[in-house]
Image (tube, rainbow, N blue to C red):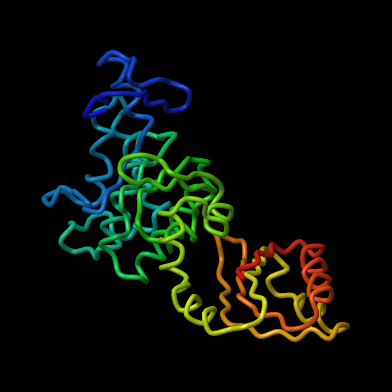
Length: 282
């Protein structure tokens, strides 16, 4: 609440922050930890002193602060770097210090604003794995602001797509990105999935075209083959991808089915009976 909204409300854990006094708001701020693209560490302070900084603004004793700092450094894997200064750390290590500092006051929510956009891919994956581990161990809600699809796929359960300052689509990650409803979401998903190449292929084909979505264990099963093997229907795979949303595997195929109409309908029916989502493209 560094800036007051001109309209609407802001609620965290059922508490309407916009209705609180300055004193009440100060208490609620401790429930929200924040990390950003830039680490904002105190260059003249050691790692442990950077983490201890917000704790020194509380009524904790020196021993309590030291114990809490030790816990946090162990959590983020920086115990051996406790006495180093920021200039001696890598970018990923600096972000780990930022995460530990954000967790110092046991917040209910961790706000991550483009927290990995300044990091290389390998370090990004390590930070995402750390955030997921923190979520599981501490039960803390993590709110990510990002433009990277990889980040969303790796650790998010739900996603909200924002365009022109408003939420245009929101829901479970799998639902939103496998069946995007809004144009902005559709464009974003197509860019990530290289679907523009598929459009060119589709324009060159004459058969009936379908997009088939697999989720979970069905991703690794020969369901399409099993559906056509007892028919005279032939199929051609024009595009295929397999990936993961958090721990859930999913896949997408764009296929051309060639054969008699009734037999094709039977194949489509069998695919849907197996729990696959089938969308006719043409």
